Image 1: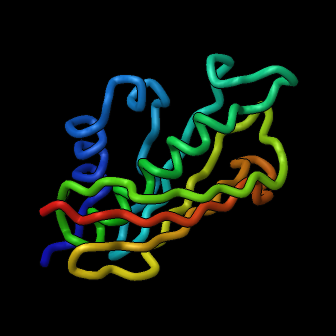
Image 2: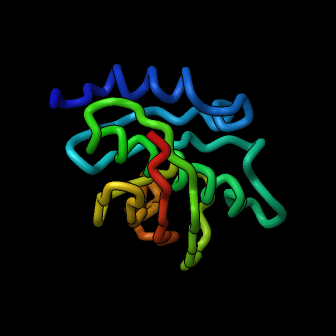
Length: 138
């Protein structure tokens, strides 16, 4: 199985995600066997009351990063669907990009499990942690 390149992972984003997810302007920082790091640039459009990045954007970025990490495991895009996502928000992120670090914990034949850490790109402090389960459709 060939390693997935950053360019190929970025193309997976462009080709397979809903328009509103693409509006998050996620970029692939790195992708490897079972892991991916995406950057979500700070945008006033993602800010909620209080000047912090909204939880909905963080959850979507986490879910998307895990799909890319799974593609890194497969060496290509395969359809998966989210079965569960549990997010713990630890602190707000304001006025900085978000780094979304996804790691596949277990890859089975029909299910995959992962965890995602979201950090502020400037201060590198952990802001949220997610655990996920995906059904592998193909």
